[in-house]
Length: 180
Image (cartoon, one colour):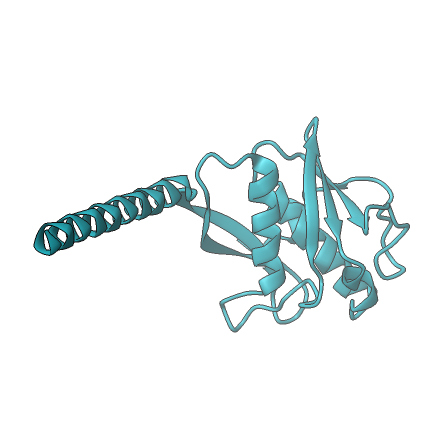
């Protein structure tokens, strides 16, 4: 009798362990199938040359969630622009401390909302400010859905980034400043 009870107990334990292991592995496969699929996309970012005379295009591959809309893509592109150039001969146009808070696109105008550091940590000067604004506008207008860019700081329009350029109206692409 003891032997029979012991065999039943072992069989029951084995059944419970198998059931728990089976549930656990299916949970893992469910979690894996719920993870977003990433896709790689080539984008063009514009950085300053070493004399701050021209913007120079730099191509970069970024990973984004498959099926992401242009607003998500634009925000990812701005994060790359903030990260600065990979080419050591080019100069960053946005302070590294700045963050992109969001990008909303409505009728071809992208409202690019940055943290206050875009303004408070900006190195200033009319040339530097122009490089920053043209860099943002030219980079975002690479997307077909964006024609102009409205700059926002912490959700609000500002008169100027560093006191030299009017940023109350949407910024347009400037082909003349691009070195080809």
